[in-house]
Image (cartoon, rainbow, N blue to C red):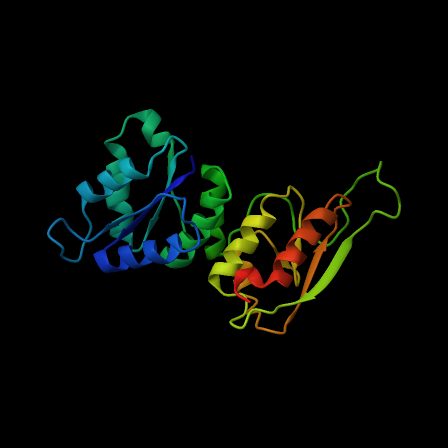
Length: 233
């Protein structure tokens, strides 16, 4: 099971489009659209949001993304009609609809819990993501041998279209399997929006680094993935 996601928009087409986009990067996550009114007009629907919440809930909770203020009000009203246990498993994220949903979907696909998915959505709003810091300062490990310090590898990006959404999502999913901080050209390797913001194009040198003495495996795995071309070469 994974955390489900509900996309609440005043437009049915916008909600459906955001779901289609996010699903490209998180195929196994329940991402449910709740856009428009019951008769297809611009607006939001209590019944549509309530139904979407029920469909998205698999037992691990739901994160809700909304486009405009009244969409938040509709979502909050739908939550008010749930019992306390159901309501406690739902979070309305404070994040832009498109970027927040994509980041949340990838986080859910990596197995993040409800708070982690909401935090990932929040990175689209400039909020700090929880988890290991991508700082380049060496992690404290008094038992580690002196030679086991920060570890860095540089590889060239071979994808013709650069590190676009799909390979970026694959990259983040792999990085999230390791409980160590890894940076990509100075950005958090577990933040989809951060690495997409780098605008990495074909031929760009990608520097992967970890300050953690135990992070060598993670850097090597990510370097191999970049060198492989993500199945597009």
